Amino acid sequence: MNDDNSYTELIEKGVAFLHDNNRLAALACFDKAFVIGQSPELLSYLSYCMATERGQIYDALKLCNDALSQEPDNPVHYLNLGRIYLHAGKKEEALLTMRKGLSLGENKTLRSILEKIGTRGKPVLPFLPRNSFLNKYFGLLLHRLKLR
Image (tube, rainbow, N blue to C red; front, side, top):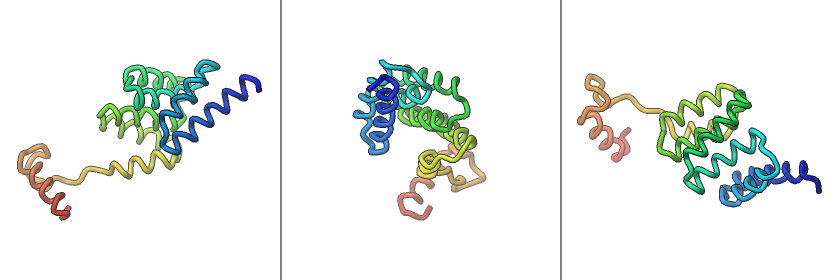
């Protein structure tokens, strides 16, 4: 088997592992492929696995942004970058990134993550600022009572 076939197979295998929610096995495939070559697709997927399995957020963001700079119209890179932001606890950046990716083309995974996260509802007391004590706690209370 030559390196090109091996490289492509490793990436396909890694993506399949990701779809099965086995990020550790996917990371192993992407690490092996990284030794052979470095396509934007590989950098993007590898960065997501690095962030989630190794906790290397800074390195993952750098790799994924490299992939994005090479292929700025690929929604998969925005998906992976958004996932990294979510893993890092940066929800707002994740939402912005994923929405931008969805604007470039339909992606079922992107859409389902955005739908799962949802959108923010209006404040319970619209005449008060969103971050006021009363809005926060009335909102929590109504949510727990499943009235909102």
